[in-house]
Image 1 (cartoon, rainbow, N blue to C red):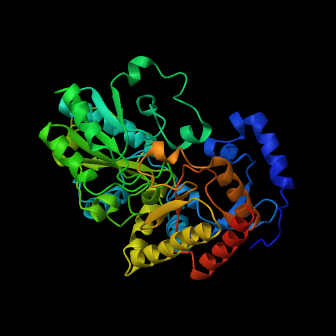
Image 2 (cartoon, rainbow, N blue to C red):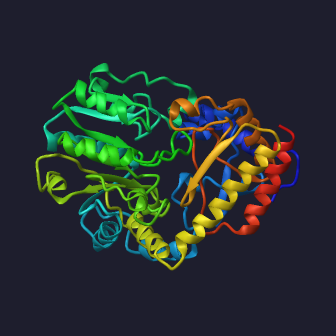
Amino acid sequence: MNTNTSLITKKSKEIFAAAQKLMPGGVSSPVRAFKSVNGEPVVFDRVKGAYAWDVDGNQYIDYVGTWGPAICGHAHPEVINALNKALENGTSFGAPSLLENILAEMVIEAVPSIEMVRFVNSGTEACMSVLRLMRAFTGREKIIKFEGCYHGHADMFLVKAGSGVATLGLPDSPGVPKSTTASTLTAPYNDLEAVKNLFKEHPDDIAGIILEPVVGNSGFIKPDPGFLEGLRELTTVNNALLTFDEVMTGFRIAYGGAQQKLGVTPDLTTLGKVIGGGLPVGAYGGRADIMSMIAPAGPVYQAGTLSGNPLAMTAGIKTLEILQRPATYEKLEEITKQLNEELLKIAKNKGHAVCGSYSGAMFGLFFTEGPVHNYSDAKRSDLNKFSRFHRGMLEKGVYLAPSQFEAGFMSLAHTFKDIEQTLAAANDVLSNL
């Protein structure tokens, strides 16, 4: 781990400078550019276990975990071995494979709401597809989403979106037609009364609700007691559908996702990240009567050349096998709790206004007194202080998400020694903010 007060980033700077002439902003996804922390990214060279190394040779304890998928740790040897064997059979089939059946059975067995599943290639694709399905099944057009909840970059979701949009300070995205978002209604997360009012204002027009059951794209925010239960009741009474976007929380908050841990079963669920074991993947699933509307079983069209890719299926199967082992989630929760609680304690002892929480293998910290119930609360955070905290931790060899509005991720590869080193680094950094 780095103990220097500053990083050697010569190669990273050279590569990023060249990248900016080749790709918009020099990146393939906006948050990677470090703009929200007023810096420039370090360029990764390799990852293994709980660690990442950049092109200048700096080593980091990694709490981003490729934004969630690396729950077993980077480049887990069993996953790599399975992929090596799968590679011999080809990288893409464009045809049915037994691997799809195996992963589908594992997902259906694990996630309470899912009776049938369709594999796609990204969380964005899963959310876009499930929205079309919700509208087709109900015969209604309007959808309710929550401010600061991010469901990918499809046009209809870029209304008061969180994550990358929040990170860059963009209101909504140029290029999105008003007609596309006219049927997207928004409410503050954790505000059940606002949702009730939307149903009153638009009776018989709302196809359903989509939300992150535990928010990870406005920073990490838990649902208030009764909130998810209230949404379940409201959608049922109004003959609308409830969709949980568990792209981030699926197989991370618990093996069966947030819905299993919190005891609220939606009609539909979107998944991604963990179920691909680090390869591009997405999925959506739910009640069989709803999913049977998807082509070719039904009239709702959705397709994809690389959907059900054998490499992604292989990595997903092996990852889920590892996660089924005894005491996996107990370990994840224990180390996540230690990091989150001790980090908050250190920050408060150093005189900083902070709040935060954790669940399963996700955590978050806000530089605000709090509490944070929604995106509006999260925006009161001291973003400048977070930027300085982020840079200080980076210089001490701790890689955190480069945005106040992103959750942190723990893995099975992290050790208590990693946590101790992280807390020691935080103690130094928070002493000098």
